[in-house]
Amino acid sequence: MSSAASRPTAGPFDRGHTDDLMSFLAASPSAYHAVASAAGRLEKAGFRRVEETAEWDGTSGGKYVIRGGAIIAWYVPEGAAAHTPYRVVGAHTDSPNLRVKPRPDMGAQGWRQVAVEIYGGTLLNTWLDRDLGLAGRLTLRDGSHHLVNVDRPLLRVPQLAIHLDRQANDGLKLERQRHMQPVWGLGKVHEGDLISFVAAEAGVDAEDVTGWDLMVHPVEAPAYLGRDRELLAGPRMDNLLSVHAAVAALGSLAGRDDLPYIPVIAAFDHEENGSEADTGAQGPLLGNVLERSVYARGGSYEDRARAFAGTICLSSDTGHAVHPNYAERHDPTHHPRVNGGPILKVNVNQRYATDGSGQAVFTAACEKAGVPWQSFVSNNDMPCGTTIGPITAARHGIKTVDIGVAILSMHSARELCGSDDPYLLANALVAFLEG
Image (cartoon, rainbow, N blue to C red):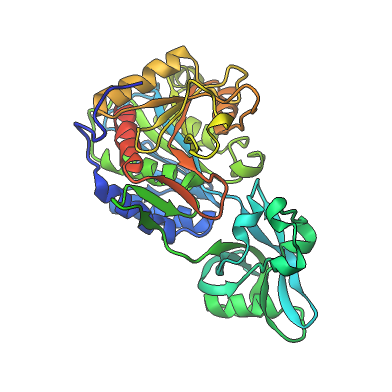
């Protein structure tokens, strides 16, 4: 573990970065909103959007591609050769939640409800008795998309009173189909009511809406927590915390033509359910972008091979901080702590992609930035999850290292991290992308 001080000795980010993260979380209730927020920040840094269907040129500068809930952005320094390797920060825009079904209008016993499907490995009980909004995108007949965000109390998943479930505190059991359908009013159920309401909120005609990707989100704002405000509570930190840090890090490098690598960020969708989508890490999006950038600069397949051989990816996702009430669930010699700096995630069975040489790259970046770092390994009796790291390494043949920020309450509707860790991560990412 690094012995560096908790605040970086070099780097562009300080506590103001964490304030900005709170704004980013609040503005990003869905993957589509997160991508729009990221694109807006990149535009301010001088990046421009390029379309996948257009012919790409080999000009230098910052560019980005959006596909659904995923965004890939990169900065080509002036004079970069076609075989210049990439430095990639990978993350994901989606979070576990409740998502609206194709026929959403339902109800019982005089209550109007919304039919939802469970997305990802959600901690179901954390969605009970919360004020919930609704956000996502609507697709119109002409194929256009419209973002919508009803960011006020609209829905609620009411828990059964303890008087009717005396065993609730001895082991709450929630059936996904029966117990997780939120209420949003009273009266008779009419098919089309929900989409008519959402369309009106988006300012479009309900008759033009032919598809939707809508999800529930808690409307409580992110907030500092604790006597000294050393903690941050908020939604969707897994993994918008990393997306925000990556966007900030890349944006800070705009105009830097002395970089030995081409810095890239890749924020994918659908990581929480396996990444098997055209916007996921299992898909071709990242590889297509990197290859097209090589070829747009006049490169050959040989240049592509050389560039990929020298490329390194940091897969940045959240990890588990040691829990004060469940310390026995963690590895006895690895207890990552909040505000202790980013974590290096290791699993010899390749649930994480880190190896010794990757660790050296990560530690060099942290040392350059003056940022402390920690190691995370799962308890042998508690098999760990996985990330986009092994997928990226295997699909594209590029060295990948798994890192992140240690948090509590992962996959809860509201998660908890240290308020220093977001900017410590961002400073480490800048040092990594610089090379």
